[in-house]
Length: 559
Image 1 (cartoon, helix red, strand yellow):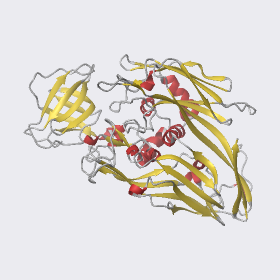
Image 2 (cartoon, helix red, strand yellow; image 1 turned 60 degrees about the horizontal axis):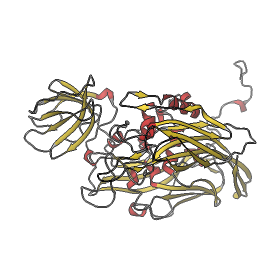
Image 3 (cartoon, one colour; image 1 turned 135 degrees about the vertical axis):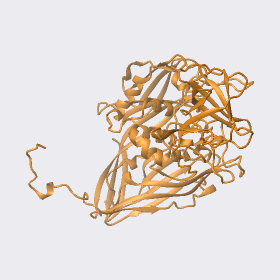
Image 4 (spheres, helix red, strand yellow; image 1 turned 45 degrees about the horizontal axis):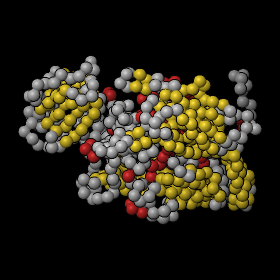
């Protein structure tokens, strides 16, 4: 509109409330008990009906959970438990879901719910959202250590730089004379420091996290990783400012003088509320929907899996809900409700309307163990508008130190960086996708990532995905490179085609620099652990006909 085109009609004026009135949230409970041990006992149905002038808004509706994450005896978890809430925790509780109108399935996720939820969140939400609403509602921090700090007793808030302060060992709770012993060795540029309580006694917990600085014998040492042993002390993996190995302090222990640490308390909330929108395309509809009979169906993970998948372990695989002592871990769902955004509008007793839906489906195939150049074939929807490729450990979900929400192969949870036998998805050195007679990217992707050699040539692949998804242009920005690698690299390609092209065959070509396998246990052979994930993003249209206030027809077809 030109700056000279003044509004001359009252109908051209902006509306105060977009024609709606009395917007409020209705609470809808599942049709069965979902608390505690009842949560995994079959499908969870939530049903509701609208009539008359009541409409509901899918994009403003959500599920709210109340959950407990504690030790088996009900006391708070601590750092020594080495457990963090899973990234995007809620999706990990479910294996499939669907949404129905008048008993007709309109939108469905038939498998790989955590993977689809993670990708949809990362490609549709800005960094500002992930770092604020996302981390507050459903643990979207990329670092498991940061997530751990939100639930453990004595935790510290991650990333609160303005509150950094210097505190003496006495202020930290150590009775003098507390001592530190520096031991050179270990990985290049690293040494270990063991802190101990002078004269014995209980050690303060929750004081240290990667990035803090401790001063020992006038040497400022940056903490890389933390390991607590209440019997022998707290061991810190450290490096000095120059990055050179720390000089060993002979055999005698020395007193450490001070530590710089985050002083702001974390949430320390093992019993908390989570808010989540399932990754069903219906929740992307921003328009209000009129009279109808609606149903949300959620299928939980099995009784042996759902609680285990609520956590990401920072050490080995950990069982959950198997005991009631302080040495055990417990996860329970206290309640779950659907909160429906409703508005009053005009009656729509006789109408036909369309829903523009964007579906995401995930398919997987195993990566050949040798890691050499290979091709995997998939069939996708003829209405596919975009494709995403990612790589993941084939044990994801079955082991809670390898989570389904991160696209990682044999991840290193302590540092989030490639090490010997860790984060093998970053060994990708060639990749392209063929669909509808077109290869993307062109020329073939040739990333290189080698921490030991200080090489990171993954940035072009990172920025291409940010450009294709639109995150590059978002005012809130997209996830930064480090977060993209910590959550797991994905390769997103928009795929515009001629309207008459109904191609369904996709070929994914890729190769790795070395074998893709898990380090062998003592006396055992290495095993293949990689798989490739292909996500196809397709368009669907649902046509809904309402007559006399009832839905008499609901049909879905590819766009």
